[in-house]
Amino acid sequence: MGDFLVETTDLLSRTPDVLRSLLKGIPEAWTGTADIEGGWRPKDVVGHLITAELDDWLVRTERILEHGTGKPFDTFDRFAHVGRDDDQTLDQLVDRFAELRESNLGKVDDLVGDGDLDRRGMHPTLGEVTLRELLATWAVHDLDHISQIFAGMAGSYDRNVGAWKAYLGILLRRDDPAAVAG
Amino acid sequence: MGDFLVETTDLLSRTPDVLRSLLKGIPEAWTGTADIEGGWRPKDVVGHLITAELDDWLVRTERILEHGTGKPFDTFDRFAHVGRDDDQTLDQLVDRFAELRESNLGKVDDLVGDGDLDRRGMHPTLGEVTLRELLATWAVHDLDHISQIFAGMAGSYDRNVGAWKAYLGILLRRDDPAAVAG
Image 1 (cartoon, chains in turn green, cyan):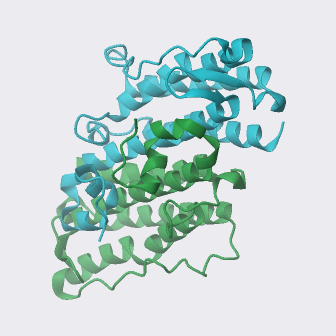
Image 2 (image 1 turned 120 degrees about the vertical axis):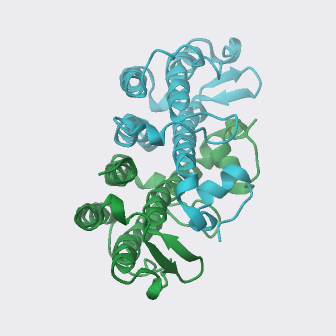
C-alpha cells in the first residue's frame, strides 16, 4: 500500500479511540451544548458520523469502483440522525460508530489499491471527483466534526471561565466566527 | 468532591489519552502544517500544553491558596516551547505532557476542596479571578488547543480533498475565519 492509503487509513483508524477517550462516560455537564446556536451537541455529531459510515464513504467508494462517473453518488442526508438516535446513549453511539468504522476500513483494505486512487466518480453537485479525494475528505470530515464536538464541550463551560473567556478563541468563535483571542 | 471539581478533573484527565489516540505514531504527513498561517503545528501545541502544566495552572492554583489576591500571578510565556523542544519528538512530548498532567491532577486532588473554589487570586491583566474560573479555564484551554491540532492536521490534507473543500469548514476557516461551509 502506498503512502497516501497508509496515511489516510491511519487517521481514519484513530477516530474511534479519540472519541472513546474523549466521550465514554463523560459527565453530562460536558455534553448538553451545541457548537453554535442551532448547531449540534456531541451526540448529534456522533450520530452524523454514523450516518456517514452507513451511507456515504464506503457506498461512494463502491460506486466509483463499480460505475465510475456513469452513475452519480446518491445524495447524503446530513440530518438522518435526527430522531433516529433518540433512544441511544452517547456511549452507545460511540461504540456503534467504532464498529462501523472498523468494518468499513476492512472493506477499504479489501477493495481499494493504489491503482484505484485516480479513478473518478460523479458527485451530484460537485461534479467529477477522484477516489483519492473521497478518502481524503473522509479523514478531514472526521477532524472537522471532532472539532465541532470540542466546540460544544467548551460551550458547556462558557459561564465557568469568567474573564478568561477573552483568551479562549474556542469560546469567542461560538459568538463571532471571526473573533481573535486576546 | 462536588460536581464541578469532579466534572472538571474528569475532562482534564482525558486529554493525555485523547492526544495519545490522535498523535502517537501518526505519519508525518499529518503533522507538518500549522493551524493557520504563522500558527502552530501539532508539536508546537503539545509543547505549549507542557509549558502550561509546568508554569501556569498548578502554580496559579498554589498562588491563590497561599496568597489570595495579595500576590498577582506571574505572567505566562506562551512561546516558551519555541526552541526548547527542538530535540524532542512529537511522541516524546505527548508522553511528557501525560506525565505532567497526571502529576498535576494528583496535586489538585491533594490541595483543592470544594470550599476553595470561590477563593480569589489576582491575574496580572484580567484582575480578580476565582479558583473555579482557573480550573474551568484549564479544561477549556485543553479543548481550544486540541482543536488547534485538528485544524493543523486538516491543513496537511488541504490539497488532497479537491472540490470537497467547499463543504469542509475546518479547511475554509484556515483561509477565512468567518467562512461557512456549503
